[in-house]
Image 1: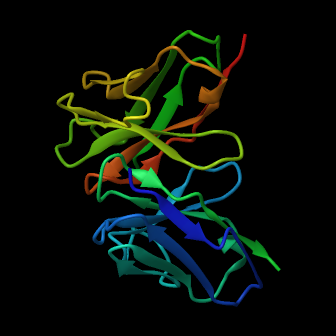
Image 2: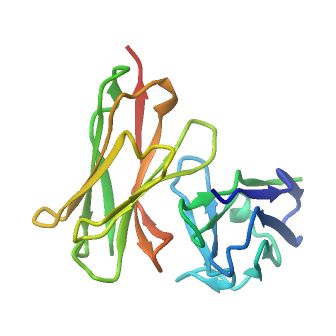
Amino acid sequence: EIVLTQSPATLSLSPGERATLSCRASQSVSSYLAWYQQKPGQAPRLLIYDASNRATGIPARFSGSGSGTDFTLTISSLEPEDFAVYYCQQRGNWPRTFGQGTRVDIK
Amino acid sequence: QLQLQESGPGLVKPSETLSLTCTVSGGSISSSTYYWGWIRQPPGKGLEWIGSIYYSGTANYNPSLESRVTISVDTSKNQFSLKLNSVTAADTALYYCARLIHYGYFDYWGQGALVTVSS
């Protein structure tokens, strides 16, 4: 099973700041990695798939990069609605696995 | 607009079987483009993929649950279902159904169904 390790566990930032979230895989997943955003009481929302492709309707301030074992989600300028928990997920191998999440909260 | 809705008992006794159904509206479960899946999230914790199914009935399961889980599809009702047997308190979670794109990413989700395992 591929283990995805996200860092940091919590990121405290102010609106307007840049957020950089990391996801590291225990073995290569090629570019088969997605990012999700989850707000309290809501289902996760797909943001990025195949490492760098924005899902339908996702604002351009969200971008993803990386391949192999190291991936990054960048939010260029945090909006108030971006404070949430973010998960990475791989489809490069079975079983599909998720990272443990990074919480982005307001500083 | 595609919508998914989970339904089923919110309370299951230990050692019994958890059963949930996901009803898909606004689109066909028989589309050759998509798989359909179940994910769960224990309270305050992260996400775990349970398994996925194609409209033909081909299913894949998480090895950690494979001995206890069955996912089935009913194309006539536009539904797919989850059965998890021999449940324990560790199976208490919010259970989501979702559509998969590109064989492995979840792009549409249900609102989730909280299932508590308790006597």
